[in-house]
Length: 250
Image (cartoon, rainbow, N blue to C red; front, side):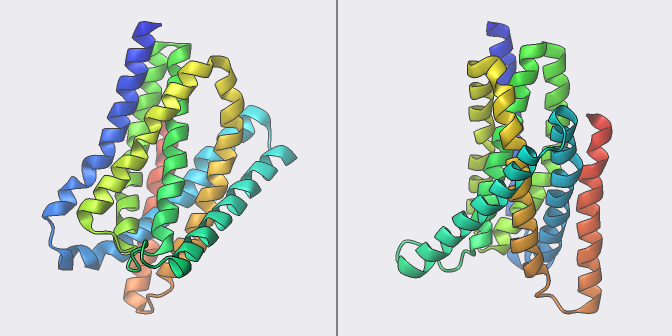
């Protein structure tokens, strides 16, 4: 059991460190990075939709069937995200001295959704190591391949939302650390973790659908130039295709 715990915690720490891939952006001039922000947001939008519809929902449907309960969990993710964003807007208006007005609410929403996603990844990795170490290693590899494009897109969303580069990188890393909490919980509760992921997976899918559809797509519509809009579409499709392609590694 000790070996299982060491492997599991080492794996989720590796997954968390992957978020620091965005450190390469620190050496890029702000003027150059700004030109690509819209496309990074587009990429993240496609990645979020694909993650919800290609990975999360089919996975839970295969395990439990697409029941009314699953639909309720998806709706709860959407509604909870709506409430959280309303609260952020409320804080924005009533406590301006505590909130940086340069940071948009969708950036905070992206951090919220990413935290849930990484927590689930940690639970899945922890549960897979409870099956066997080889299964755990294979699952970790799949998560790492999934995280690289996801973290790049999330970093772009935070920058577009008003975060400075260093702050965006740090916050991205902090949300990635929730994977460690997920793995610890999975190892502690053992067999019961399957019941928790039955709720968390469709809940996360609902959150991703809300963030991509309600927050990110309206941001993309602010661009009216035809050429840039087409490039946004290409980036969105690329984000979706890359996440979809990871299904072959699972």
